[in-house]
Amino acid sequence: MPDNFDKSDHRENIENMQKNITSERYCNHSVNQHDHNRYLISLFAKTAAMKRGLWALYAFNYEIAKTREVVTDTTLGLIRLVWWREALRMIYAMPTEQKRSLDDHPLLPELAKAITDFEIPYALFDQILLGREFDLEDIQPQNIEGLLAYLDNTNAPLLEITALICDQDLPDTQRMALGRACGIAGILRAIPFHAQHDIVMLPSELISKDAMLSGDKTLVPQAVEALALSAATQLDTIGALKKGPLKAQKRLAQLDLNHIKKYGYAPHHNKYSHPTAFLALRLSIGR
Image 1: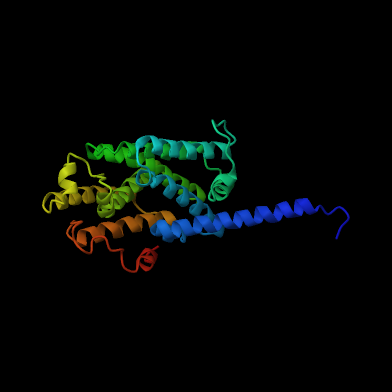
Image 2 (image 1 turned 30 degrees about the horizontal axis):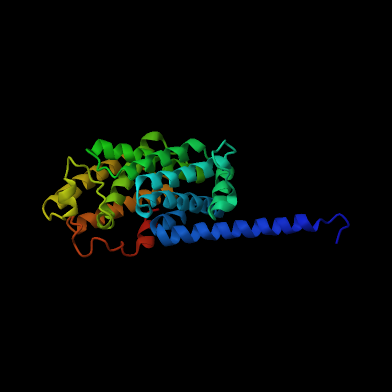
């Protein structure tokens, strides 16, 4: 052993390595367990580093997206989002109200690594957090334009970060259309889950909250079909995408819309909530 060998430095390096491995495993498990479709999408990334970056991003997205379901009132939800904003500001070495550390949450080391490795701007995360504050208001969008504005502040920046991690150019028009199409498809697929929490994301100009939550078998399919057609229109404007997670994301939206149409745009159908069969294989087709 060299004379200048420092045991404390060696021990610190091992601890940091173990922490990073633990954080990577946490993000991998979180996305695979709670957002499996995005986990499958991440597997289309070219490199292991890109996959790790996407797992950190999607684990973060899951943590803030679930805020509406895990808090009992708006104030607690806002406090939770402030916590994440402060954690991000700490990573970016920005002033915070409360002192934060990477040890405060197991995904933070991986998120910090992704932010550094892929030079992700803070503004994109802040935009997502601002968009999620709308969830806490528990307000049904009044019209399709309002729903699209919400998706522009949640899905679009998520896709922009995905493009940065995957080193893929994604023009503004494609990013907005893809974010809207994927967002609408995801909302439509989640109708049965949202209903359990008295959440209605379909615009009131299409259907009232009462009709939606009561499962009106005439009005609900009509509203779902109208919104699905809007998502299909967005998909048609995107054009060709290079192989990778973004193309897989587009493919997922199309598969979701096909599934919804197959069961008559009817969330009450007993197979509407079923996952798409052989999804991994279908995402691979034509990738």
